[in-house]
Length: 143
Image (cartoon, rainbow, N blue to C red):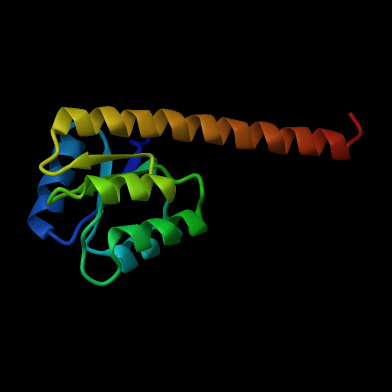
């Protein structure tokens, strides 16, 4: 069995390296990206159970990255990390399709809980999509 992939997107290299290491120690296949553009490139090549995305980044900020990621794949489960009292921004991000948000510094156990919730939601969406495809095939075959 392959571990589930998580993408961590933040412009703070030390932070994503440390978080990826902790997630790997809990059995996750954690990948990293240092910005929105790199995240979009990785999502085009790989399937992720969840994406942990920083809200404040240079270049493509978290909101713009979120919007673009959702255009690529509306089923992506994205957890935003907000800092500097940006709860209002976190709520706005949820309106654009984020699953949830956490304030920095995030409690690791709380983040794991949110990642597991993202995995459960993603699995339900995958099951629903498979069921719809099977139904379409059966209709085309007149069964």
